[in-house]
Length: 117
Ligand SMILES: [Zn+2]
Image 1 (tube, rainbow, N blue to C red):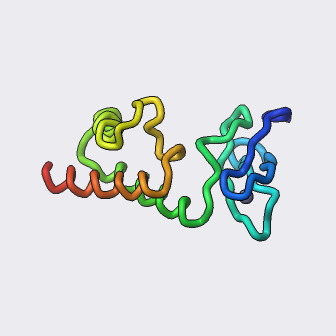
Image 2: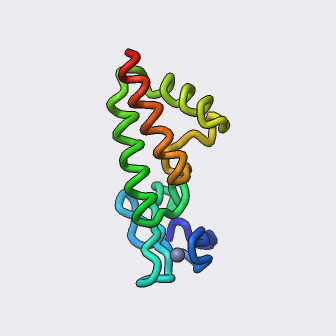
């Protein structure tokens, strides 16, 4: 099975995560449930997309995704601007890798950009 042999650890409770399902519905789910509900999507090779997220982080990432999608500029330009503002490398500038605080910063940045446009 794709993703076999990969070790993914939950950043919240340090439990092992396991790959459930297959592309495009695959997900890495923390085995620390039910106390921990962290998970993230898996790509077509079974690799985790970004890092495992709990409910709060999932909400923050969804908000960041939406804020970026609503920008009147191209995604590439938006990513460059956000990476610069967050002071992170462009290669790390993926919403699925950002922390909760960074996601809310992205929402702020996008709101400001939208007003300026
Ligand atoms: Zn966990």
